[in-house]
Every structure is written in structure tokens, then in C-alpha cells.
Length: 488
Image (cartoon, rainbow, N blue to C red; front, side):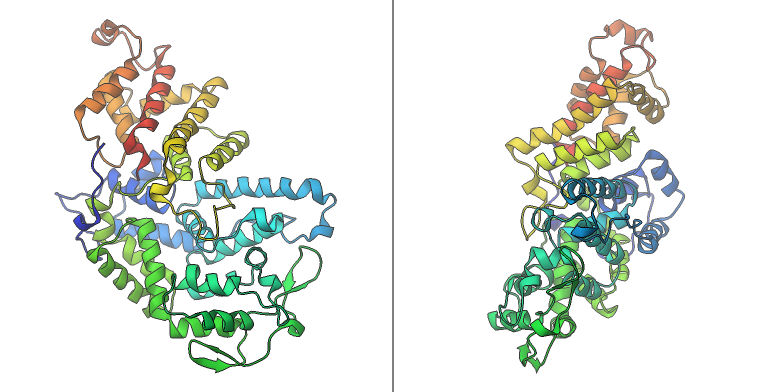
């Protein structure tokens, strides 16, 4: 496997990337964008992007994501318990429907889906705690609406979302019985980082200011502000004293700690989109991004465009340094093959992705999935291979095996050369070429299977040969086992 580039190697700046004859705009760079900003792309989408320059391409992806309407509200989206004809049966069934819809969104939405999912792992809630399907919808809807919006307003919306109010006990936070859970995580995980510029007294006073969101119109219905349970005493937060309430907390936080918030959020986005590790150069990049965020009053689009258009983002040493999540493994493969899928396939894959560490709507804890190296261990690695195996086997066993050959024909112009077919298919899924030529030779041997060598030598074999679908399928399974396949 090629050595992963260390962060110190990426010395490029945030100046816009300009293609040259030595560093061209090509399919590898386009795939880099799609794998980081979405969940991969079909070959048709990649080819279409070649007609745009890098700036136009990034503008198109970001502007499309920013202007995309949220997924339509299901009819049960704001149900309370009493609105369900059969709550015990329907609640989880509706959640499964919504979990499936969310996965389809991730497949189809590129950057909006990617960022909505990112924020779900930042402002973490867990369905297993609130266990109410309409709250899952309302939480996801909020993430879609604010995915590329104003980070301050996203923060403001999160704290009074029902899923969050229940998950971090905000609905229990009253003047009679204060609960500090949300106040602590607001600073420690959501905006500042652990121990960065706040005190225990700030947490205590903030919790008092966040009281009052305890009034239910019905069990598991909307949660309203109740003046009777609000602590209307004087509080001091970050040195400011007054009878502060919920909105005041958000305003004071961003007024007094704006620089810290901007750096913390930009660092997290940098690690997600560029590299999981930072050095002095990376820290300088993050500081520039943070200043852009501040200069635009926490509107995220200018900062995101600056990053995604940059030489730093497109630098060779920013490629193949992020380990795919289970969702990346599956959804990227589906997008980059354009293979058939249906609800049965997606539901099965959702289940298996949960088994290998990424259960959508149920991150491991309030800190979320830690990503990158945490995705892979001795048990999850074989599980990741099985994700692709199960998908390929389902297609094979249900009469869709011809699409394996269709992919090979499309990518190789219906070549008859087994080495060329193998190398083309391998490279299609990789960020970079394999480290040694012998790796391609091994893959070619696997692809050639038990077909006699003279069939290849004499041109008897081609991709219409009756064994070709099976040969492509075993090659795809081999590709999914390559270390390089785990990187994006």
C-alpha cells in the first residue's frame, strides 16, 4: 500500500487552484472532490465536470447544496404519541422509513447530504434515547436547512430541537431542578472545545439561562418554553451580567468567544474534508478559514468555497489521507459503479453498516464517531469487505450480474485485454495508482480466473464470454479488500 502522505507535505496555500500542464484538471481531481464533498459520483457526472474549470465546479456544487430544498415532510413528521393510530407498531416502522430516506438523500445530494450528516455527528443526538420517529425527522430537517447556512443560527436552532432537549436533558432543566448537561456540551463539544475559554461557573450560569423548555402540548409532541419553570434571576456568563435567557446565551457566546468558536469549527471541518491531522501549515490554513468565517458573520459558504477551491484542498498530499467510513465504503461504491439498488438492498446495507460501527441516527456517544483510524480494527475490517461482498452477491443472485460486465465495458471501451481491464477497474475506485505494478499483476490473475491462457492469447475471450460477469465480480471483491480502497 502506498504510504499515506504526512500532513507536513501539504505546503499549498488557500490560493485558488489553477490547472497547468504539470498539474491538470482531470478525473482524479474531480473524483477527489466528489468523494470528499459527497459520496462519490457516476462516470457521467465526472465526465460532465471536466467541461467546467475547478472554480465553476466548486461553485456549482456549493450553490446547488445551499439552494436545495429540504426533503419533504412525511405526514407523520410532527405527530405526538396520540396522533399515531398504533404507536407501538408505527413509531419504529416510521423511523425505519426515515432512516432509509436519509440514506437515499446521502446518495443523491452530494455536498448538502455530506454536510447534513457531518452536523449530525457534531450536534449529536441518539434515536435510542429519544425514540420518537417525528423527532428524528425534525432533527434531520434542521440539519438540512442549516447545513450550509449560518453556524450561529444552527447553534441557536439545535438547543431547542426536541431530539436534543431530550438527549441532553434540556427538557428537565428547570429553575427548581437545574440540569447542566446541555450547557456543558454546548461549550465542550459544540462550540469551543474541551476546557477552552469557559469555567464551571459559566456552565452553571448558562444552565440557569437555558431553563424553561419543559412544556409539552402532548406526550412526545412539541416542546415549548414555560415561563413558570424559567430561572429569571441575574446570571453572569463570560463576564456579562443580566437576566439572560436562551437567545442571550447564544448571542453572548458568539460575541465573547467568536474567535475560539471559528477556529474550533474550522479545524473540525478541515480534519473532515482535508486531513485528520494538522501541523503548523494546517493550523495556519485553519486560522485563515476561521477569519473568513468571522468576516462573514459565521455564514459558512464563503469559508467553504475558499477551502474547496484552494490549492491546499487539491494538493497531491491531501489525496488518500482520509479513511472511509462504512457509509463511504458502501455509498461510494454504489455511486461509482452506478449499480442497481432498491429498498431491500439499502435496508440490508444500513443494517450491516451499523454492525461495522456506523449506525445512522445512533452515533456511539455524545462526542460522535471519531472517524478515521477508529473505523478500522480486526473485526470491522473484515466487516467492511463483507459490505461489498453482500451487495455484489445480492445482485448476482437476483439476476443483475450483467451490470458487472456493463461497467467493465463502459470503462474500458469493451477491451479484450485482461490486464488493461483489471488496471482500469482498479484505478476507477482508487484515489491514486497502486504502489507497485505487482499489485496489478495479482489482481489480473484473480480476474483471469480459470479461463485458459490461450483464450486470452488468441483473442477467444472477451467481455461477452459466459464467465465474464463472475470474473468482474471477483475482481470487484478483491478491489474492496485492497488497503487503498479504504482511503479517500
